[in-house]
Amino acid sequence: MSHDFEEEFAGYGDNVASATRVTPGHALRPEDIALQDAPPAADNGEYAVWLGDDSLILAQRLAWWISRAPEMEEDIALGNIGLDLLGHARSFLTYGGKSIGKTEDDLAYWREEDEFRSVHLVEVPGQDFGLTIARQLFFSVYLELLYTRLLNSTDATLAAISAKALKEVEYHVDHATQWMLRLGGGTEESARRIQHSLEVMWPYAHELFVDEPLHERLAATGVAALPSSLKEDWDRRVTAVIEESGLAMPAAKDALCRGRRGEHTEHLGYLLAEMQVLARKFPGATW
Amino acid sequence: MGAENQINDTNATGALQEDKHAWPLWEVFVRSSRGLSHVHAGSLHAPDADMAVRNARDLYTRRNEGVSLWVVLSDNIIASDPRDKESFFESPKGKDYRHATYYTASEGVKHL
Image (cartoon, rainbow over all chains, first blue to last red; front, side, top):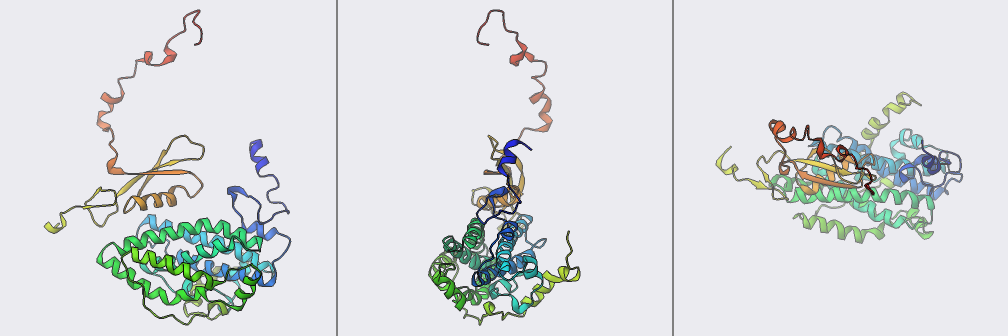
């Protein structure tokens, strides 16, 4: 190890970590957040868990594609996106968990279905490439707009996690956009299937923009962005991609979604069973 | 292959794509943060140039390897023929006078 290297990472891993510290790769890590002294206020913590749950559940959905994507290159692309989201979820859940004395693993593996606060959009199955791309478009554009706003959050940790996540989410938007253009402008079959996929995913998109009382309290103190305030930009950007892809705006009606209150579709239970089985069968296992 | 299928498609780069169901092969060149030039890293399949750059990002820079990427359709690379190895590459052997170290500086020559 050269002298420069030692100097660069001096103090690494000791107990003075903060949300803004620079770590190898210049990334904020969940381990750093866990070492912070002050737990977040209850509302801030709850909000962090909501953000973490969305990304965690979608990461699990994307992991399904590993070994199943149409080409090896796309297999890795979807796997990478899933791992990016898992990384964001780890940071948010670590931070949120501190307000109630729980770790990221406690929250991911030991909560029941009705304790998750994720939106329905991320939990419905997407086992068709078109469904996954339509969902990625809807969700990634939402995340990009949300994290851009959270850069100015009065909660420094939420702002720091968002800053790291934003760079990755911008790539997710690009990935989904590229595929929308190609599927929409590809063959008759690809256009038909991506159009159908937009219709299937559309009813769940509106839940991303529902203001819950928690959002309203936190928006008042500058911690959170009000979901409804993102809707106009989201509509404009998603419409532009759909139109450029030569597709029609979906006409399906909104579904009843109350994921933020712990009411989920029948799909979440199966997803959690698969995600949690190892940790529950072998508590404390490491590998 | 039926007659109607024999019209070749062109992809985004204008390259011929004879098989509609196979993505063409691309060669990937990565410039590392400390390297001066792009170095051949490997190859991948992609439907067109834009996707090739993105796939290259996912396949070849996920461990912080690079700051710049080039992709080139493999078909566009003109390679030397391995069978020409002798006539192409053996001629310089024995011609040490092509290296500066072959020469000894004459006494009294400055600035060498």
